[in-house]
Length: 78
Image (cartoon, rainbow, N blue to C red; front, side, top):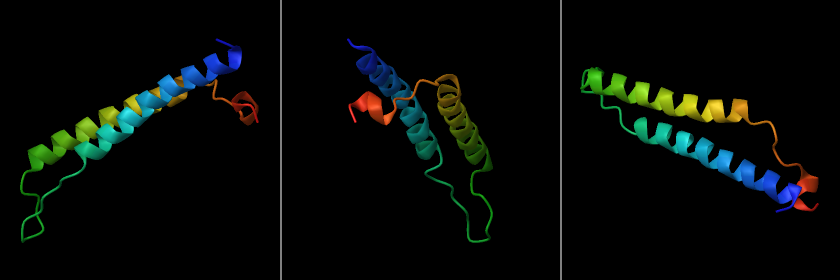
């Protein structure tokens, strides 16, 4: 595999981790029920969902922070 292809492949693997974290955070934050008085119906569930979303976001951010070899336009043959 050429250097450019390897660089793109590594970026693809990191992108998968980032997208997984992004999607996981979205899923965790998909529901937040409030009753007719404007109060959370299940505060412990919301807290749990927020913690799960934060873990997913932290995972994605760590992957971005630790990867610096993003392909350039030239790496794609441009």
